Length: 395
Image 1 (cartoon, rainbow, N blue to C red):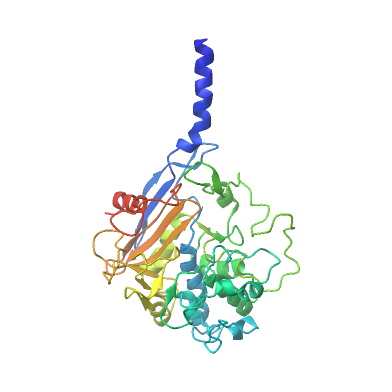
Image 2: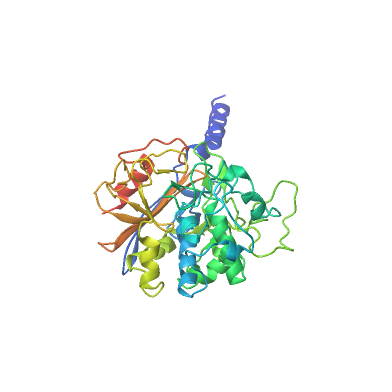
């Protein structure tokens, strides 16, 4: 009887183990000269007990926006893109806010979340076979009260599929291929958007499985192989890329959140910022990328959750400035009053950050997983989970 009871108890504990497992958390510190892993705990894959390391790629969420913007600025430096040109000229069709048809929409407005577009739930997720243009004709994706370029900020994922479509049109390459050539390959990174161009076989084998706080798999349970279909396809439809017209649907490779990258490699992107873009961007392009294009005045913007929480207080071209001490701001993640630039990420239970203290020339790249969607904030508008990683990693 005792043996039977013990066996049953062990079986129950085994079933409960994935939900009780320690969240995967990694942090890598860096300066202009080098990178240094400072924290790695938990499991990258609970099914096989694989411990997470700083070399394991993870879906890094909205930090992807910053990497997309680096690609844009490389094209600006080459003279292939103009931040203030009407994006209609690149897209091949007229893009206008239906309530403000006389206002042009530019890359500057898209990258700084001042275009007038809104997500309207998850309408930024556009499946294979649906043109971006069709989604942009939906009145629900437009803020009816604020014109493009009016100084109103509304954090919006849908801006970035438009940017990605522009990149495809001017480069003649699929977005994932273009960003591999523009950013990832020149920096020697084993990284890719939506498991597309650029990731090695090792990256598939070392992928971090994302779990929700309740224990179920949220993303990237690859079991060592590429996904059967790397892009969003509606149930019952085939994963067929041909025919596909470049620029038709920039959402496919998730320019707003789909980058898979290790913290070691993300830290190397941080080094590009810490060095002022030297050798990668012109001084002028770097200055445009990082300077705030918008500042919160207490009433001129909303975050992704539709509230003015004090999280976004200064924002450049997909570059978030924190520690700004502005009116209504609660953005001092590090709690030391120093200004930093970079970006945060939040999706599928993951919270991430890439933050650079430009004056000191150093920063931190990190993620932690299985964070509840309603996780409490700490001393700032960031979650207590993110603050804990920073406090344990930042020296």
